[in-house]
Length: 299
Image (cartoon, rainbow, N blue to C red; front, side, top):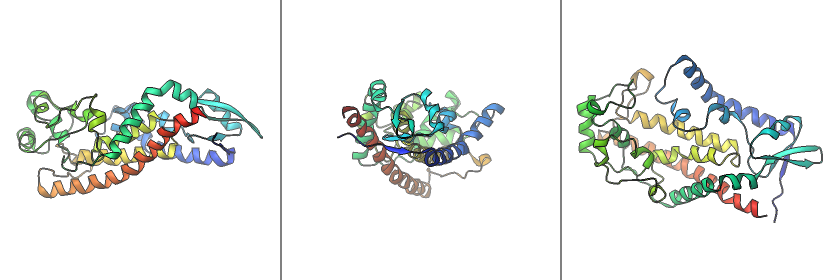
């Protein structure tokens, strides 16, 4: 049966849009300001440089599926991608165009569905201790380091020793692909883009950060409050990821998580499990959106 859409008057939805924009600008505006001044931040720039969604795109509010926006302010959406006009009792409104979206993004939707569903069904690995970042800095005296403006907390030789003496079992291809050449063979697994759907697991910090990627790739089907929940999770994970890295972030106001020690490992796992719990809820919400898209088109 066709799903009945909720019609929102301007007085109902514009406060939601304004709140979302303010929430997003709190993260995006400092990044834009730094870019204009030629400055970098090792943690807070990541979500805008590694991922493809730009601040201006993040600021846009979307209600998600089955919502019609009415009122004069809704007319601007006539030029927004994947919106269509619908007639309401008070005039022309605009809603998410599910059919156009699925026709344009079918492959991306299917891949997101596979990754989200598969990851949610697997057990989490909580014994990686963030060593992917260390493997990216392995043999830095030969390769250099990705974050050239950050010093190594233990120095090059001691960083290499941690990589050589710890068990490295990264499951995430988009972390593994940044390993230094000498570190590749030290990883117990050899993840590829083709095996991503088989290896992604819910304990992985990067897989949980990537919920933000799936959220914006499925937008505007995904309501913007869910996008921001995923963004803020990724922001918190990135902070912890870099605290556990081999880099010294003291000048940036962050104490290290010393994963080369037993207490540091315990702290890492404690936080990792907290993030996994947050991610589990968001992953299922995103999967519900992905699974509902074909149903809407078929009606």
